[in-house]
Image (cartoon, rainbow, N blue to C red; front, side):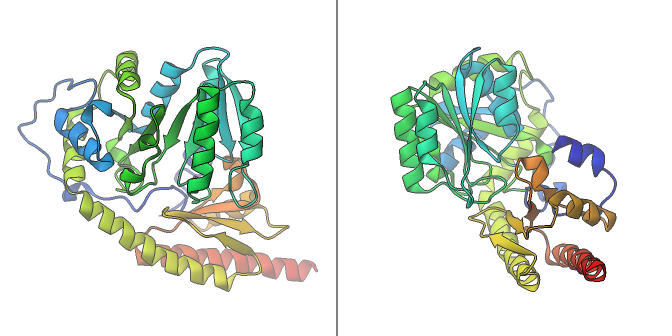
Length: 354
């Protein structure tokens, strides 16, 4: 994914339907505090910001560590929890860090393939856990599927984790209501999230973990070997955003509802070429392509008309496209019109060849 976004696609598109966040907010929605002292800040994050994060979980600020985006929170957890030889269960398709980071730390990474409809294979998970596990990594709602883990699936995973003595790490970047967090389901569960996806503020690079106080404290200690603290300027802006969370939540729901209607109409127009996996609260959806359509070739054709999409090849699942639809109507309308044009051109070429 890094190569696709930052090398192959860089500078080649003016419409972004590939990144997985809602349309980005702008700085004029926040206030730059002129008298803010630009010191190091606090390793765990400012008290007011941690209070705001804890409020979203309905919990305790002592269970919060503010980090440089969700990515640092995830890495700190891996580095704190894992030792060489520990066994980690991750899922495919999924976020590459969940496999690569533990492996680089010397852990043995076990992969469980999601089912065709992106569900969990509970029998396979139980079999993989028989040899013992240190950590199970979940992502709900999932990237790239947009699917939420069901209540029954989560209960089964938590039971497997308890028998194995494992922690459960939940990447919940796309969960709007964190009072539904996996972190509230047991004593060895940790949630990671940020302001990047739902609020549309990835440029602030402010994320967090929420979990057992002893794990949070250990991660804060390890953080001194990475970034020490997050930017006090970014934390100040993040505190404002969380204090005004209802605005960002309303905007997210507006954009996802508007975009979802447009996406459904687009898929209907192209029903012979693709099918939609209905998203469950995410700003993106998975388009399963018809046999014979290459997701990478299609994504390259879209780049030629200035639209970024995320081909399944870079997410571990060729044959599909992740498309982000939480964009203002005119942006999405133009992007989907170019998509229609590319698909029409491809159909015409196939007709001529036939």
